[in-house]
Every structure is written in structure tokens, then in C-alpha cells.
Image (cartoon, helix red, strand yellow):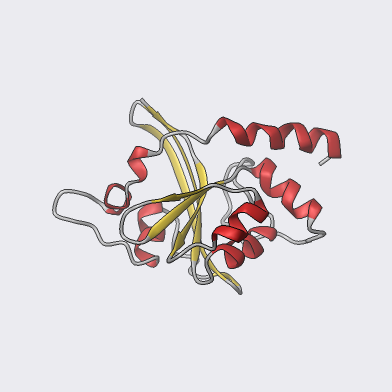
Length: 161
């Protein structure tokens, strides 16, 4: 079974009005974490619509589908001020890759963070006897980016992004 998501992970209560304004769905996870599915297409459209410029600091080697638009700083701040992570998984049958970066309002918080478990620890998630941080937060239950985000790929084409 595959696991392929791109998302923001936020800590604390999420502003539901901001979620509607940004057209995002907030998925509550365990240990006070919320997941917001994004794609590189959705972040490109938000960046364009909000007149934002700039890119997030990301490590070398992230795939071109990893969202890097600086508008994600604005989105995260509107939803739940504080640290947040941008994550991406691409696994099938236990083989694949993952990427993660931890940010706060000023930018990349810790360049040593590169796995999702690292990012989750930075957000306060604690492993249990039976589960690592990934499973303790409940990320294993969310295996795919929702199809509703496909509309942003079409919008990118229409806007020339």
C-alpha cells in the first residue's frame, strides 16, 4: 500500500475562519497536531493570488514537487501561529522517500531536521512504546493527498504558473 502526501503539520488550535479563507481542510491528528494537505500547485496559486514573493529555505535534494513558496509562512501563521512543518512522502510497498522541514514565522527553524519524525519531535510529538512519532501522531492513517487539490494544477496552467 502506498503513502503519498504533501502537507503542513501545525501544532495547537487552528483558526477555522482562516482555513475557510485559504480554502484548506484541517485534519486533526493525535497529540495536538493538525494536518493541512497542500501541493506545490496550491502553494503556487496562493503565492500568486496574494502577491507574495520568495521561497522557503529547503535542503538540496528535495523533489520539484516539494512546495517551497514563501506564502506557506503566511498560511501557517494564519492557521496556527507557531512552528510548523512542511512534509512530503512518496512510498509504495515500504520503499520510497520522505522529506520534512521545520519552520517558524522567521523561516527554517532547524536545518538538521530532514525526516518527518524529526519535524514531529520539533512540534512536540512524543513516540510511544509501540509507535514512532509518525504513527503516534496518526499520519499513517492519511495516505493520499485529496483529489480536490487537483484543481490547483489546472489553475496553475490557466494562470501560467
